Length: 539
Image (cartoon, rainbow, N blue to C red; front, side, top):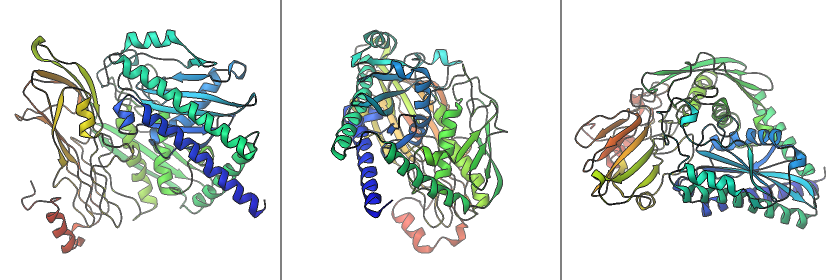
């Protein structure tokens, strides 16, 4: 290929990325749920006609992006090519074919140019409610967790399936928000399709075959070079988490070969009777993300780069099978990177960050008038983050959503969705593990219903009984705490009640420290105190 052709291909590749970025921004701008609009809990991408991911939007979470990369194939298996038409949109929230639980809606749309299928666009978003018991761990099977939508058509030839819309409205607590998000997802793919067609017409392309081969060949070559440079062998790690009513052990073995990296979750505890199980499609998504952070963080994430990683597991809590309850699959899915990175740290000592809070401290609040009085009912969802682990050479980031990457919702947006008040939201002093490099801080959040209201909440928390470990001599981060303002201790998982007049206080866990604390310099320690990260009495 000539230099001019190389440059032209690179320009088209960048143009394709701008297409999926606009696709994702459409969803951000039009979504009804605050989890999408304010936190970016979504993904968007473009795929070739065979269902291989060409490019993803930067906006989005690894759990959504990497499951979506596999989900498009499931759509193609279910809907034959001769039943695909222009202006179609397909949908599912099947946990085993989509992104791991019912709250995530995945939509796929074929893109046609001059009557020929040239691409697929796909997107995913977390909706506020899918009916059932609500977003929580208390269900005993997936059938209790909400409405299940098999792979089907949301729209055919541009005509929306209004029967599906009616069924949705009859099964969810927030019908306007949920249905609005469905239309936002469909619009997201439609914008991607329009921009792709504009691009192809402008450049004079009739297919993406040549561009796809350019993208995949460059990615394959770069990935192969990185993996070849890694030490070869097998390394194992175990991580103990809070679980629901008893601790859960996660186990992984990472094997690096000449041309691939394999992760095996053998040794992980069995499936739980509670809704904390994780389908393998989601465990795989975060295992691949962890590997890519180490092997090739600067190489584009597409079908060619993901093909170098394989993930396997017997049936267990990281490979849950139907009809296991899976609503809180994100908790252990978010722990998978720390699990995998702990194994890799043995192969690459001195290069891997310490453990962090891992799982988001999501909380779903169902608020209502107290004692049958007058007032407002609402379903409120908040995403909150603890501290990241310290890094070799750098302190950990505080109140940062690693590995999910979502944003924290602004207090104003959260309070706007229902009759609640966030009285306090601040960094939690002394929560980061000590070390040559300090772990990131958690945060303290104080929540109450407005006067005359009370609320139930679904706790989705971890690292309460098992804090994040440090690395290379660094100290553990401080564990999380869930309590009321009168000192009543609450459980880290499950639906619970907060009476009118009481406040719920969440103290999020900090990240582990890195390196011997004796090596932390006097200047750094003085700065910790001046910023309030560490207090003199350590409380």
